[in-house]
Image (cartoon, rainbow, N blue to C red; front, side, top):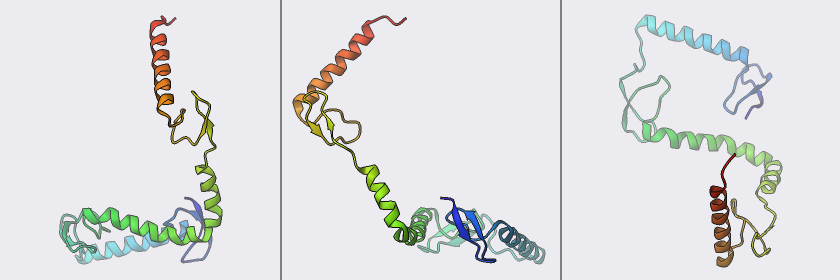
Length: 158
């Protein structure tokens, strides 16, 4: 969700996603510094974890093959970690704004009762339900749908 964020380096406001910490200028400068550091390590022959090497998962301790420079978890732990991380990041924002989120969400959930196609009784539909829960109404609706289908099939299309 794109929102206004505050840059952690310069303090300016900028538009960014939920994991955006730096404005465009500061992010570019951090990338340049990272590239310079990587080039320095490469020149010196310092390779932290080459791709294809083995490392231990920070979550369960199982060995895995490194497929990315920032990888910290094995395949089994990546998704649960991401879900926990996203939940931890989203929870405070939700707590601050639940007075705004909940009425909107509750209104979307609220469904007004509709009349049954067969008997006319008002009921709360679940999904695309058009008849009430009575067995006779369900059977009559099925009969009508089947009849309409057969009639449509019989008539030649122009």
